[in-house]
Amino acid sequence: MPNITVKNIPDDLYEELKRCAKINRRSINQEIIMCIESNVQHRVESPAQVLEKARKLREKTASSPISEVEFNRIKEAKRL
Image 1 (cartoon, rainbow, N blue to C red):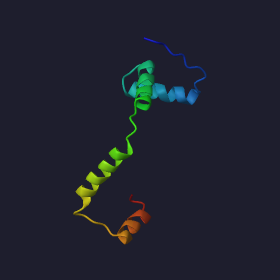
Image 2: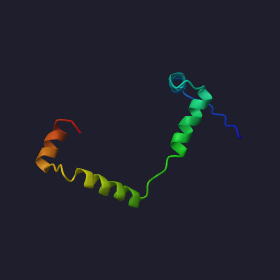
Image 3: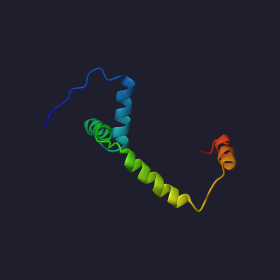
Image 4: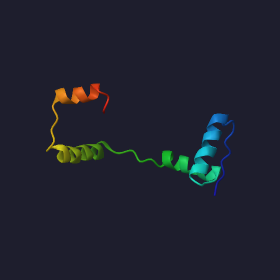
């Protein structure tokens, strides 16, 4: 397996990695691998996939319509 050396990690970032590793019961190396995997392997959805999800969500919420006035009232109340 290849190795990577990361230099000049800011102290606060290193401390946060240590904290996360401890919480997750992993070594710092394992925590770094998890961080890399979650960012590098993140799959970007195609526009068609996003539209399909939006259509399904619209179907689920069709029975509970909300007016623009109500939407803005809720938004202004910072509940969204």
